[in-house]
Length: 261
Image 1 (cartoon, helix red, strand yellow):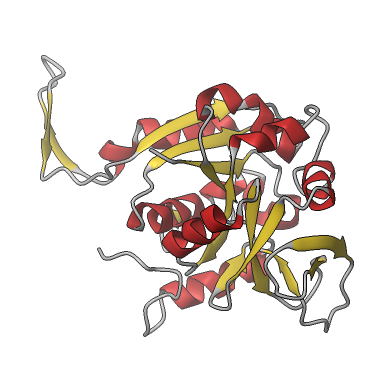
Image 2 (cartoon, helix red, strand yellow; image 1 turned 120 degrees about the vertical axis):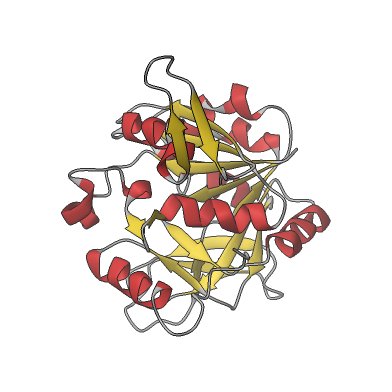
């Protein structure tokens, strides 16, 4: 089964109002951690084997999954024997591996540390703070047909992010550049599909996934781009969280909610 790897170890300093007490992937939207929303997106497409790369406050992520069933299910407990009967148990058919990849490890280093748990197979990779209505099945098909070592999802987002320089047909990445506030160029929206060859581009804990490893793939023509023109939003600030909350509680279904209850 194709694994889904979530980068979930950073400090989330730009959302310090929330992240002083919990890791960013556990910051809630609609009463559920944003990480749960991301996992629901992947599970909708049949990808339900997750590897969570924790670091900062990883013990809270561990506790969340260890207590997952008890958080949302009625039960009867015999206090004498300790036996618990779950009443109409509601849970997800997920397999979740939680790893402590270090508090100071950079994103590529986290991925490299997880290599033994990912194996020598194709896998999905994304950030633990961004949601989208990207069609993961079409993304996977595109990646396989591209012959690349990695495919990123390119999305449109005005503002502070660094833009991508793409080939004329828009299917491969040629480089990266800084972006002005009103530049409508495409950016890296995460939602990667990777071959095990990507581990060869990573030297150690000090490397950012978005720097040397991806630049090396660019140089070798092995980084592809899947253009998604639908919804995408990262949760980098309190304002972003408020926007996502508003959409979740709005009259219409939240745009990233591709799954059925």
